[in-house]
Length: 365
Image (tube, rainbow, N blue to C red; front, side, top):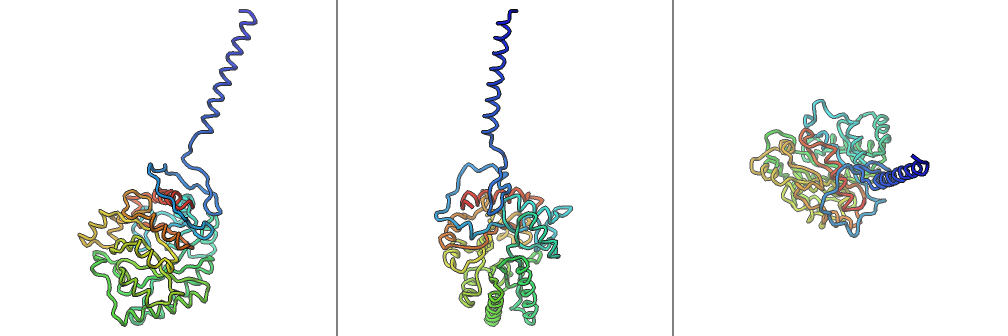
């Protein structure tokens, strides 16, 4: 073989390698990764491990001010606060809940019985993941005789806690006569109905708590809840009309309203100026229908999958118009995804990512 022939073959091989290198380079730069680092608030975290859906929800116009709205998720998809037996075996550790909350791209979490009681430990775990506590829960007992002092003591405890957490909202719900934690009890049929005296005690008590909250730089938000004496539209109207509009605000929980036969969009439009905290909870209609038909308890309904997250195609609630009304009202504060689910049937991280992906598409947050 002569020299010119050898050089010709070498030149051909080099050209082939060069072409192959170009193809590899183009392929790498055009890959769509299953997860990408994208900003969420001031943090850069993994915000989507879920493939986008084929149908795109309408984007809000106007949307929220990203400097004044925070996205969070409650721990109830991992572990239920009303029934701690709704969990995996062995139980999901609190570190996993916080880590998967951050991994999903959320900025905060509701307080949970699972989280450390030691403030130094809790703060360390939160700071490690760039998370905050959005709210505690206070069950008031103004409609039960002799329980007023107990209510004020617990409220003061939670105000002090939120000061430690640099938070603002204190979520309350009247639990006098509540049946949502009772087994084999239909929460819609057997929920309490307050007398005029009980209503007077409740609104007066809430006005006092609202003033305490305001004096401490906090904000009281009332949570209408299934199986309690404040559940439907008439209850909400009576509560809002009887309380001080400056000190007692409303928590919009879309799932509890829908469960009670109330249109969440109607409540949003009516009380947009008093809604200062939001739980975005979805409902699976077949599970709701079966719960109503059979008188299923609240906790058994959770086990049977009555709740799910925004963005789940199996959910009955259209969140876009609700979020649009809030954005139009210049809502400021937390938008908290909440779906009490059995982690044995609904993998928590999957649903957290599904909800975060949906909210990103709709709100651009």
